[in-house]
Length: 174
Image (cartoon, rainbow, N blue to C red; front, side):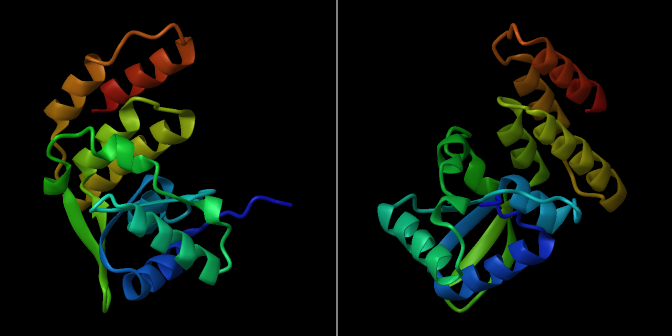
């Protein structure tokens, strides 16, 4: 079975549905956030949508939403919550994306988005980061560049030459 891709229209439709069907606050990160925010041509295999309370009930509600929308349950991912919660002030870096009858969906600020991408920094992550930097430059969205630089240069050393090259490219772009 071919892997389903989520383009901007599919992400927007799911976010609209989530804002009506889910309850509470939710954060969209990763490729889904990129597609709906600064990279309209971006597609993703999964949607990283996490409940702000971090409860099992939220995860189950998200799976129910996916099933109702005929989306494979594994295509909605709340594992990003682990990485989000490792950033001390993450709650101060939320921007409202959609508000429905029962839920509010947020996206990260540019600073939080970049911080979340740094540790893995795959090729797609680097592309997202570079696209975001360009978007912010042309749309006046602020980035705490010094915080991102500091985090980037204090990451553990790597033996992966390709990762080291991507880190250097991002550092130069900042």
